[in-house]
Amino acid sequence: PEWTAVDETTGLVYLTLTNNTSSAKVVNAANPRNPNPWCHVVHMSETGGAQTATTFEWDLFVLAGPGGVVDGSTIDADYAFGSPDGLCADPDGRVWIQTDGRQPGSFNNQMLVADPTDVDAAGRPAVKRFLTGVIGSECTGVIATPDQRTLFTNIQHPGEDGGSTWPQDDGLATPRSATVVVTR
Image 1 (tube, helix red, strand yellow):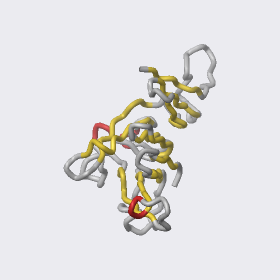
Image 2: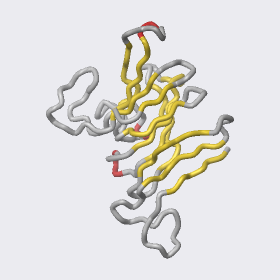
Image 3: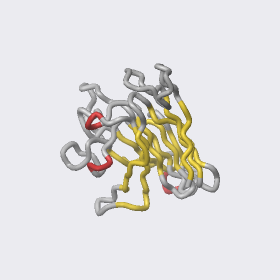
Image 4: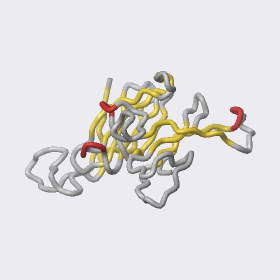
């Protein structure tokens, strides 16, 4: 696991599993694909929803990848992603997923939002892209103000492999990490 987040309303705990490129991995409930280069997000809760439980129940929440049935992804191809990393559950139960690593189609890292209450016929949550990071960056550290009208996220190590002067083309050759503020 890379990050964890708790939905304070439901008590569900979400965990990102970011990287599993080893061909030696066995296919099982926790690793449903081999190879599994895109990885996935799981969620768990105390058995029976009891805070005093000494065991927990868990399930796959989202299988990342190019989308569709080709690779077993549980997401729409329009919102393809891989290497889920950062994570946050907001007061409305939405799960914010940030990526750091290999992306399908050579896309940049990104931040997506999953709505556990908006599911398809197979019970898979709707996942939509919220923003895309710049070349060579990681999207990380999302949080919102209590009224959920302002969202903060970080764009870390942009241009790590070159090709970026972000956040601006100001004559400086070195790109810089920054915090992005999104308001509604």
